Image (cartoon, rainbow, N blue to C red):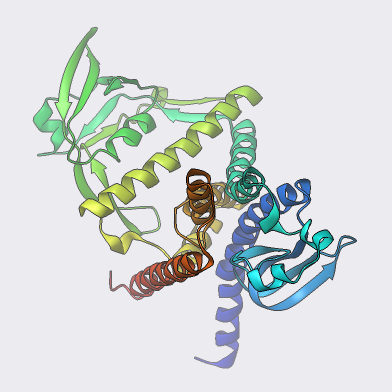
Length: 382
């Protein structure tokens, strides 16, 4: 490859893949850390550092209260370091605390009441959910709601649907007692219910019938060729133009729809993790930074609004991940505070140190495994 082509391809890669990834991740990380920061300031905790990214500082400044705001070279996360913390993981520096005066300790995170510390830690994931609500609500108000009527227009041969007795023209009214308004609603229940029998209520010839079908775990491809696994019954929507419905949404409706979208991500994440543990899901579906970057670049080809929708979904996912009860993550800190509330005293410094090391090891192993999946997927080995 000649130098001009090499430079051109590199430039295209940066514009098409790197910048969209950094853009989305920076928004999500910034609001997560901003949640910690604002609630910390509200609780009179001194904040030493507000960082987006890790590693060497690229840009930065000090605000009037002494906080160092900085953008770092490795855009794969961020942190807020409180006064009295030993490092970016919010591990307490007990030696430093023991040498502080009473006045100095007033600004230390560790000396705050348990409920205040819990509020500061929980504020990060909560900020992620709030960001997702704002983005989704704005998108629904702008675009309205587009849905496909739940009328069956295709049935896969030898599928669960054909064996259950579904017919072309059936309108799905309910799935497991849940009312159905669109074909997208049908998919949301079947995708997370592989190997579990569902009760479908369909309308046929003016009558309602009950049909039992068990979605089968099936490997599928999205519009970009990425493979994923989900429960599949084997029905498709009717292509009659009359079944394609689009209507505007007011603020209240858009807000409710945004909550529904967030709950869908939460429920799918829960079911994915459960099926991963039980062996129904393939661990190769896990994505690391490279995989998320690749997905971001693919979505970026669809436009800025689709990219913002991805940012909302990623914000929810990062909020959920940080709530996992793993030391180093926010959920791990909340677990410590819960144990402290039950025991009446904090865990020993040694116990917390061991827990942090175990937690950090778990996170690194997960990152390495997910990154190996990304590399295998990138070269077509998955």
